[in-house]
Length: 466
Image (cartoon, rainbow, N blue to C red; front, side):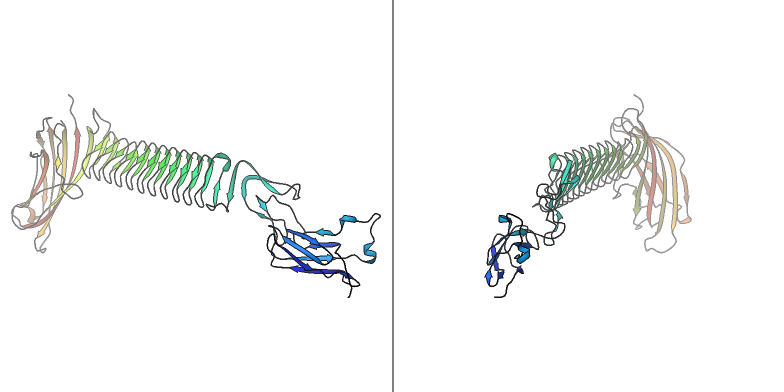
């Protein structure tokens, strides 16, 4: 047999923990000899040789294939030092790739070989690289305190959490940073001190903030966003309903699409808006300053006012005794006639549906100065002919006596302008009972015209001294 002193063997299909042997064919004049130099093309394997075979056992860090170089020293190559090499041969070299290092296998993995490159498994913020890359000093990342660890291999998937401070990021793609924060919802974020984001896409940042519904955002100190898509931002704010928003200090938005901003403002009905320290408790009501808007679609501003009628707009400048006893307001009333007969009349009313009478609360003991400005337009019931117009304006004073009776005290001269076809139209103010109210009534006179009438009523109200 021809002498063979060198060979390269290819091992493939290797299974972790399962030895595989291949004949190396090394011989001198047909006599089998064992290799004296053995080199593996990559690390992560256990090697063994004898006079016939090379045996490779794959480790957990090794690949499924590896090349093994074997060599038998001959003639002058086998000239050994005095005393020989003894047990130092055969000599094994694993992973001859330049740059081979030893890592801690936790924060950094791999050995730098072609089959097993170095990879950062966990990225730590505020950390430093440590180690020399040797068995005695493997490469690793040492985190400073607090540590922020991103671990894509956690069962919950893609979370970031500060493990050293009692945080928990249990939700997929969640983020928990700070002290005892909890992000348990999908894509949730909790940052700060004892913040909780427990729903999908929820965000809680600050001190003891809670976002407990999908898309909710709670920022600041002690703020709570529990409505779907709600936002509570500031100190102790609460947004508890769908799409509600609370900003500032102690503001509360407790109804769908409600908005409260300022210091202790409250928006408690659908679409209500409260600013400063105001309270809006009517549907789509608006309150600024420290005024109240207690009726639907009402608007109150200034200091200590109260808009208690639908669509009322009030402005106040403080009070004498009770809220709303010194304020100016305006309201729009409307009505129409069908044009089926002469002398048709209609009492104008206000509100979204046009069905609210201007009542005077019994026992209110209030005095009113009111100015109405009216425009009326009319055409024939068939829709043909000229358009007729009229306007009316008058100032009047009336009061409630504290016992439920309303008296009209003074009436100014009515100003009236009409086209020729509307000369017989009339407009009158009265204070009838059942219930006591300010009644504004339009009459078509001797015409049979279909009409529409709108009145702008401005009034000042106060409670006299007792």
